[in-house]
Length: 170
Image 1 (cartoon, rainbow, N blue to C red):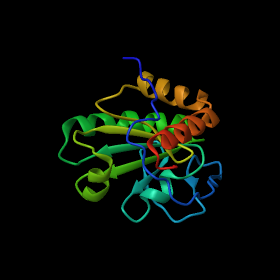
Image 2 (cartoon, rainbow, N blue to C red):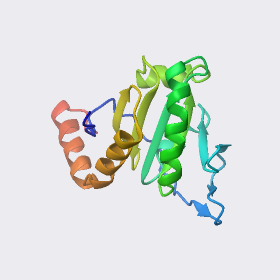
Image 3 (cartoon, one colour):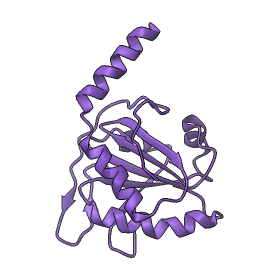
Image 4 (cartoon, helix red, strand yellow):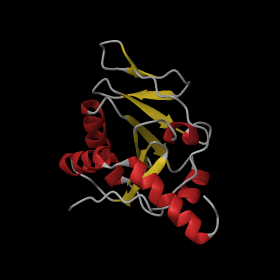
């Protein structure tokens, strides 16, 4: 599978930009200036637990924010979780979050998520990738590399032109 980052997918308004200040104290655990609940993984990597309270702030962070949409009853989600955590541990410069779809139905509805697991990727508050399915490590790393290489000024410019052509000025 060749993952293609598409910024036109279900773009969500990012709201206020919050500066990302990960502090690495050498333990491999990343702390944030803002108060996000973090779930400790077996690899020692902190994953942000996303909820209605912090979702918009988290995905608006500068840089790349990847989100695993999951549920405890989902077998594929349980298999995908350790892979997601392994990739998160290797890419500590990015933010990785987990969204429990059973608890956060409002966010799920807003994003139009119908199948899980689903993977979301935001860069600088813009949704670039949203796709359900099971991704292996290589596929996830490919998605991250593509997102890292995108010229966000081009994306913003094109989004602005699209907004102008719809007449909404966004």
